[in-house]
Image (tube, rainbow, N blue to C red; front, side, top):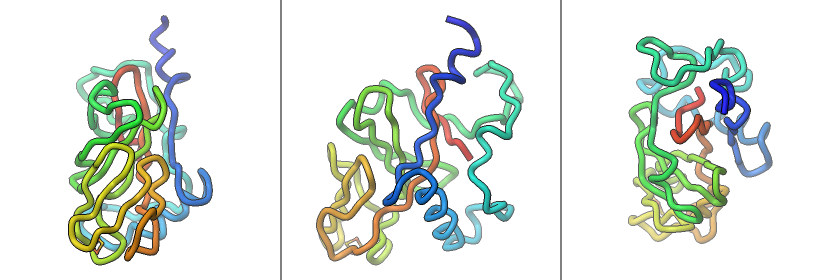
Length: 163
Ligand code: FES
């Protein structure tokens, strides 16, 4: 148990529809939909998890190295999911297997309703689309496209935004 162990445990999960890089690219492609959400343009590179000089502290007063604290890992049931807010936007977090955490935009890819966590699925209340909580993929239409992945990391017992 060292202070740097959380870095090695930290797992950036960008499970998208076609794997990690595809998920990142898909995320970047979907980002411009909300002009207020991001104050600066993404650099089109992968999220800056490895760019930041994380110093091994999780409670430092001004340590923006990793994104905002989202939830306790224990808040997300293994095999389940929760509703959340990431960077001020509605989001969904799932933990398909112990310690593996994924997050997605909760904005439905059909017509923009807010999708709700429902165990191992995400359900849209408007027209009934269902998404796989582990991948964001469409299980049931009318939505045709998966929910965009949001990069998150596990840091110790916390889930943090990775962008
Ligand atoms: Fe989600 Fe139509 S807006 S299914």
